[in-house]
Structure formats: structure tokens, C-alpha cells
Image (cartoon, rainbow, N blue to C red):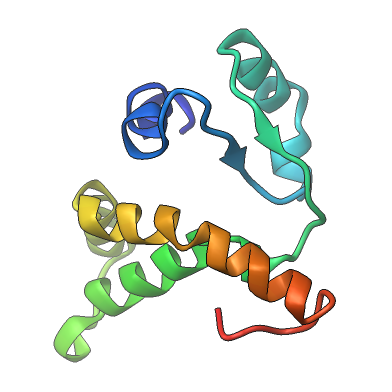
Length: 122
């Protein structure tokens, strides 16, 4: 998944050469293979606690994807059809959405600090 995610091209393109990748500390993200991938590709990780949705714009992408997949009340009759819709939607996440979420990070961080770690608008 990480190799197909275009991290090596999209990270620098969206955030500049000193970009930092963000993920929470769930078990799958701490797997040896995952850690090896980041180390071998010289990808800097943002260290933050698990379950920090205010600081995790991927939650916004998941929400956008769910709305797209089920647009107009669409229902799927097979797992394969749902699987295809999810992968097609993932492949078509608008660059403008990614850019908006990336540029929102300073505001997100400010709000979390301002709320002393409490819930924010994001």
C-alpha cells in the first residue's frame, strides 16, 4: 500500500522537500515492514499519539471517500463491486483536496494547542 501511495512524489510536491509524513500509532503502522519502508526511503514521520483525529487529515479523506462511494444512495450487491468502487474512488482523490488538507495543518496544530489538546472544529 505504501509503495502504491505515491509518497515519494506527492509528499515533496504537496509539501516541499522537507515534508513530514503523518500517521497514528496503531499496530499496523508500527509493524516492522512499515518502519523498514519509512527508514529505507528516508521518510520523516510526525510523532503523535494514536487516535488524534484533529491532527489527522486522512479522516477527512475517508469521509470524502465514503460520500463518493455511496453517492446518491448507491448500494453494492457484491463485495467485488464495493471493492472496485473504493479503489476507483481512492485513485481519484482530487489533488485540490490533498492540497487543502495539507495547508490546513498549521491551523489544526494551532487549534489543538489553543484547546489544550481538547476537541477542535477539525
